Amino acid sequence: MAKGGGEETRFGDLPEACLEDVIALTSPRDACRLAAVSPSFRAAAESDAVWGRFLPSDYCAILPGGLAAAPAGKKKKGVYLGLCDKPVPVDNGSMMVWLEKESGAKCFALPARKLSLPWEDGELSWTWTPHPLSRFAEVAQLVDCTCLDIYGRLPASALTPATSYAAYLVFTMAAEGHRGLTFPGQESTVAVGGRVVARHAVCLRPDDADEARKLRGAAVVGPVRRPARRDDGWWEVEIGRVAAREAASGAGAGEDVVASFEVLGWYPKRGLVVECMEFRPV
Image 1 (cartoon, rainbow, N blue to C red):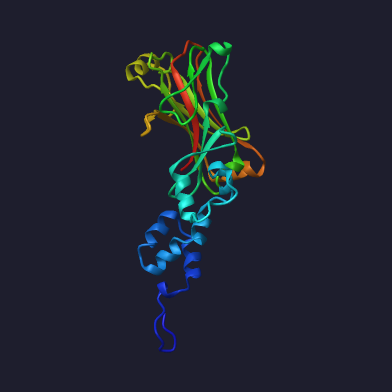
Image 2 (cartoon, helix red, strand yellow):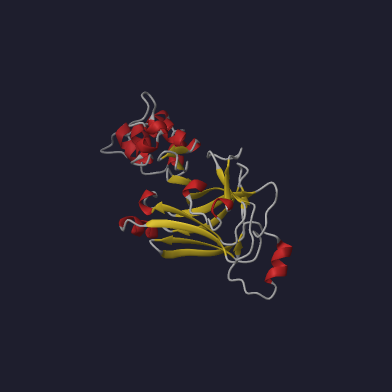
C-alpha cells in the first residue's frame, strides 16, 4: 500500500510480530506452506509464537515424561511435530494421546483395560495377552460369551474445543478363528451425558453370504458400517460421531462421551481381539 507517493508497503515488509499474529490464525498446514513464501515469512511461520498457538493449552501435561515445559533448546514446532508422530502414554499408561497433524486437535486411545467389557463368565470370558502389533502391553481376546457389549468413556472436557470427533473400535480376529461376529444384529452408539447422538448398524466381520442368508426377509434400517484395514495391521470400525456443539454442551455440564458396540443376540461368540477404542477429530 502506498501513502502520499511513498514506497509501497508489501505484506512481507510487516514486522515479524504482525506476521506471527496473522499466521497463528491459520492452521499448521498453512503455516508450513507460508514458510516457503520468503525468508521473513519463514522466520515468522516457524516461530514459537505461532506454534505455541497451535499446541493445546495443556500440552505440557502430555509431553513424554510429563515435563513441565518444552525441552530446553527445542522449538515449539518440534514439540508439536513430536506429539503428532508418536502417541504419548498419560495417566500412568491408562490411555494414549497424540495430536492430529493438520489441526493440532487431540486424539485419544483407550486401551482394552480401560474399556467396559462383559464378564458374564468371570475370567473365562476374556484373556489378556501381549500382541506384537499393539501399542499397549496387552490386549483382550474374547474366549467365550453370549452377551457382547463394549463401552468406552471419555470426559467431554478432554476433547479439543470447537472440534467434532468420531469414535472407533480397533480390533482384529484371533488366529484360531472366530464365531458369532458376522451378521445379524450389531449396533454402535455414541452418547453425551446419556443422550444418544449417534446410532448405527455395524458389522465387525462382514460375510455377504451369511448376511444374505440370515437377513433374508428382515428389515435393515440404514446402511451397515463395515470395518477398514489400518496401516498398522489392525482393523477399525467407526462407532459414531459427536458434533462440536454437543461436545461443548457436555463439557460445560461435566458429562462424559460414551461410545459403545453391541451384538444384539444371545448366542456364542468368540475370537474377537480388542486393542483399544479411539476418539479422533473429523
